[in-house]
Image 1: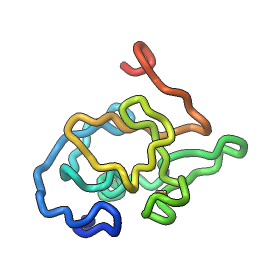
Image 2 (image 1 turned 180 degrees about the horizontal axis):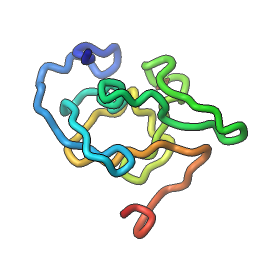
Image 3 (image 1 turned 45 degrees about the vertical axis):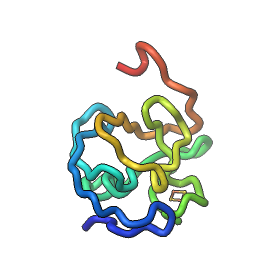
Image 4 (image 1 turned 60 degrees about the vertical axis):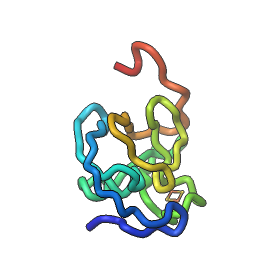
Length: 108
Ligand code: FES
């Protein structure tokens, strides 16, 4: 099931398929849909773990308010994937606790 209407991002009418990478694995999504929607469609439910207790978190509010969906997107940690649109070639990684910006060798 796909998100075609979103309270913040609006209607997602264009269904151009794009390839993105989740923890290095190529996946397919629809350009312009929330990253979280593409991950949910691929069966990914855990997006991050908490800093102290390492508990799993995934989508909760889906409107950019709770931060449970934060992931590392193109090297930028704490990206709320429920309100960030998917683009060709994006690199999305599960976030472990509080991350720092990833660059260079860490990113290959
Ligand atoms: S699910 Fe709450 S901010 Fe994304």
